Length: 153
Image (cartoon, rainbow, N blue to C red; front, side, top):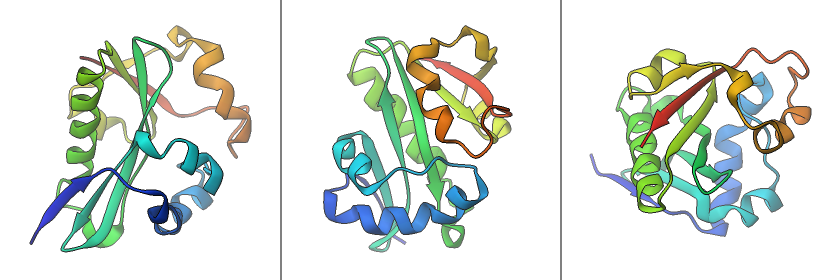
């Protein structure tokens, strides 16, 4: 089995959107339009197994000190291979290289992120104008039941 992490190109967007659609429909991940994904394509990291896209995530920078792990998804066919862990580790490595101090996750998968060293924080500690701009598009808005976790780089 060959596992490869890589930076996607714009021609990967259609496949990425198909992969994440079920999670978007459930309200677990926010919809990102084709244009949004194209303008932020450099923030994504993908993973493939034997040449097949198996998952992806994005490291979205909010400020010179803070970024967020977004849109983390691994195809059901490839779960259990620690690909999600590899994607988050890639975000940590990229965050360090960029000089960031903290990486945030707003998630329903608290245990997963805690196993990777993230610590739960109060959502009220987050800079509103940076983090909450996307919330209006969430199907759970205005009742946010996601958990905020932070990783110190």
